[in-house]
Image (cartoon, rainbow, N blue to C red):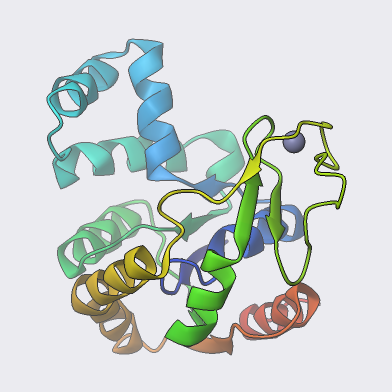
Length: 217
Ligand SMILES: [Zn+2]
């Protein structure tokens, strides 16, 4: 049983590494945003509660999100563990999650903290281009869009820079992360489960470091 938390500033590449870990470990990713949207669509009682908050543009209370996480963790494919990415974002959420996991006889076994300097994140994010048709991403330096302007995945020609992929937005998100989310790391450091992983280099290099940090071949 392994419950993992992927930690790091926005733009550190958590999502990309999470996809890889899902395959490697055979456990699902817990994405609270996706789960809330799905629950809303399902029309369940919990989904209707989410709807009340979300359609009013209000923040969904932590307790409700936790109910959803509990429901997800007790499903068959998540019984042996899960990968948390983007949650918990605050110390209060981390404490509540710890309690829930304890109730299920589980705990966060390992926190992988991806360390990427702000300057590197700025370079990654501002160089990002995305195909509006299919979501394929590119980077002007590392994986530039084809010269003929046609997307390699779908042949579409609308490859653009997203409006929030700017240096200003990146810096603002980073500040928020430093203030609110970084204390979550200290919370888990006190439990001795944090491993820092250098998040700079090729995708494969970073993946290898993560595998080492969680102790798998
Ligand atoms: Zn495309």
